Image (cartoon, rainbow, N blue to C red; front, side, top):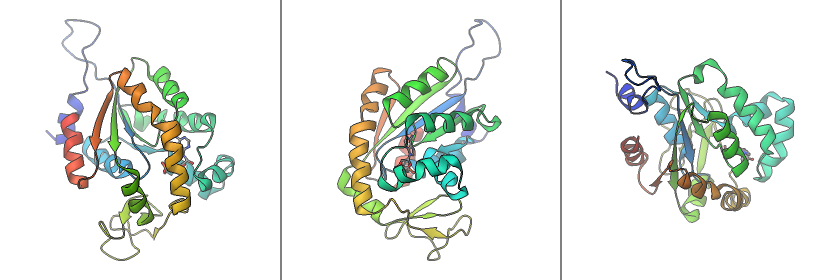
Length: 237
Ligand code: AMP
């Protein structure tokens, strides 16, 4: 049995029909919560491989729309460039359309969503009892975040992040995984990062209390290596 199957097995819940020999698996929805730069994307990428579930990053979906010049991309661009949140309704329409696709039937990993209470409530009301939700809250101090993000480069093609000092690519400027071009995100400047952190503390951090109350939240300190953090997340799951 592959390790991913072991992990997914922990999310199986008893069928309402007691006594039935087969247990119905509920789709697993993993929410990666945490400030920008806490490693949500990195951990979600690792979890995707382990669990065999799609990694859905609202930031990546938006950047793809901007790149393709869609109406949504045009509406989102100025918010993103200034470090502000894109309006809830645009995000909800985009996200719910994505998770309705067939690859999400067994569950998915959310990265960068929800970011507001309205988004979290919309997700809860959509999923209701139909899915098992787990929320992993990655904790990291603002000082470390600024250091991380100003030295972050990401693959233009697959979105995988690198760090110029602590996790550089094997070949400068080239993605190890897909050979795509590595670039600095236009919102990874000190000025925009400060705005994104302010927005996080004002609008997203209240979700910690929200999910705590629902008893869905597990917090993981993120000063360690990505492998150590990943091991902790696997213990939680
Ligand atoms: P990220 O790649 O997650 O850091 O997101 C980059 C930018 O996309 C954010 O600074 C926001 O402008 C926008 N964005 C991504 N996800 C959301 C969301 N769930 N709600 C609102 N705006 C978002």
